[in-house]
Image (cartoon, rainbow over all chains, first blue to last red; front, side, top):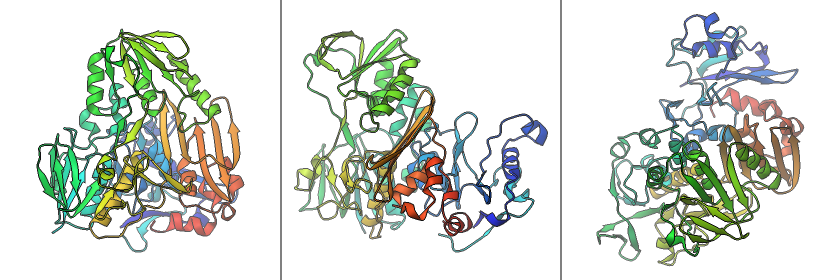
Length: 146
Length: 410
């Protein structure tokens, strides 16, 4: 299946992916209304140092430890996509404790959210990839699946 | 065709069912459940009291789970004996069921200390199960004065759950600090202060030695008046079924990394077991939901003839009280690295070139990177640990390692 991958040598560290992610998942059609003057809670974030930067989001692992560890049974994997049922999540952060990539963070209300590849929002494909000005984030098939 | 019996219906059992079905679609699976509920999220009972969830959402799996997994569930039944010679289990109604493989996932039970006069207390509760929670909920109102015996994870989560629903909460514990099983003194003090600021009262290094109706006589000589008592002193692994037929048992049922007990065709998983803690290098009871699932899954795969090893178990907890998050993992040995601020604390413990454990209070972003260093036993000289100790980030890994993590299927 297709996943999001990063080419860190091409990342400019511009953080546009974070804004595109927050907008795509806001449910609001106008970007200014969705984001202007508000703190954003994207499901992708930039890490790095003064030399290198790259975007971190859910890896949709072959054997996701977050799914096995969720104390609320809120995280599941269907058709290769790791999803969270925000209605079941109680915000205990156990998924943050176990994710080896540091991919998860809570939304503004303390409920967990995660990259679900924009498959169920209006974008329909990862907004971070679509808006990346330097193709440092790509959405493609790489290697064998489970 | 194989005939799998799973004794217990908690998260370890759910893991076992899913593990079996990942290999064997046809074998007969029978689950024996003492509780009259489909598998639910035990650690969510305090969130239920806080109205942050409800019984529907507390279900661990969807309503059609057992059907989809093609399982029979016997509700309200208890296994009284495993007959290893005839390969049958015997239920409390004398039903006998044959097995080819068993997974013992019996969990743990609250330990009730033999305190004088406990029988004179009218309203007393445990805080382990959904039914305990419903009973407690029924007994309290906004004027209730609650005494909780035990300042561990269960007692404190109960206190938080009851906070907005009762008049007062006092927590006592013989230990000199809160959460003594996962926090050292300094960290426990921070958490205790935070709980006190939210109105929870503590009597530490002190416990009830005698009850007389609504009064607790404390070891210190103090008297505490209450109307509702919650006993959260500790839990004991339910090991009897295995012990009775000569299986190796310590504080829990001893299992190897394949979740095999010392008895043929009998596996065990979850809070009833004692397995390897790789951060300690010894066996230990690891009564944690993630481990229960992973052990159950491993047991299931192996019961079905597959080959799965769960060799990365460590203690780990993510727990919050009144918006203060605490994460702990591993074992607190070796050298300590510390960062402190008014509202946060980080302690990392390293030994033999490995991260062995950590305590994080207040600031927990990307803590899973630290957890994975412990679980994977990553040699710290292969990463930029000076950067890593300050901030949990994958920039501290080598570019090749990072390319694997973020540029390939993982």
